[in-house]
View 1 (tube, one colour):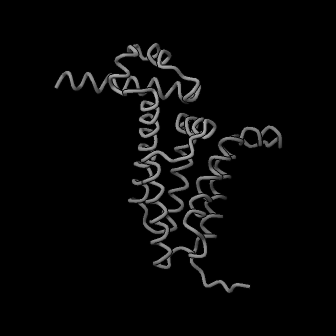
View 2: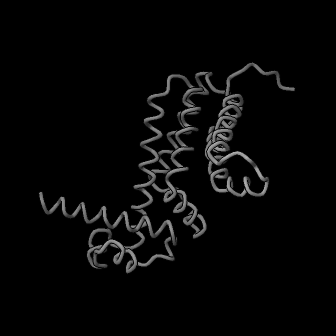
View 3: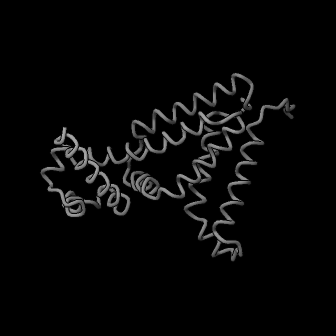
Amino acid sequence: MRKQRDGEDTKQRVLSAAEELFAKNGFAGTSLGEISKLCGISDGLILHHFTSKRNLYRQVQEKLAGQYADLMMETRDSASTPLDLLRQTILTSFNFWKQDFAYQRISDWAFLEGQTEFTEKEAAFTAGLARGVAQLQEKGLIDDRYSPVVLLTMVIGPIKFWLRYRERFKASLELKESLDELDDLFISQLIRIVSENSKKTDRIEK
């Protein structure tokens, strides 16, 4: 039992060091030697636990994706209505991406380095969200004129874009509000836009 705990502690130290370096330098820009130096664990022991740098990278991605997915599932379970679910999903996503720079940076690096597929947990989580939206549409609770994929993109895409460029907007447009005030304005208006465009109504098509 002690040996098992020590092995798990070693893996967590490696994962933490790898997360920091992959977020800073990407997969290609990070060597096993650098990870070894940061966590104080030999290359050989790292490979014993993870078999390769690529597998270590994937496990870091899965760990971060799992944290995000768990948080979103908690949000889903606590929501009282479909519109409350939308609002809470936006707020939870925003706060997560605002605070967890490692996941955002590793995701950006993965895209730049040619990774075109979701991780296993990201794929399962995204598919689950899309099914959830589709079920709400079938029940008549969300406007079914919009694709579930489009609705999900309307939530996640603007959040990532805002967090990446908000400081540039503030500087170039000479905005007087603080970043926190701008964040509050952004999130309140995004919630309004998404909520109003996802409500089930009897609109007459022109």
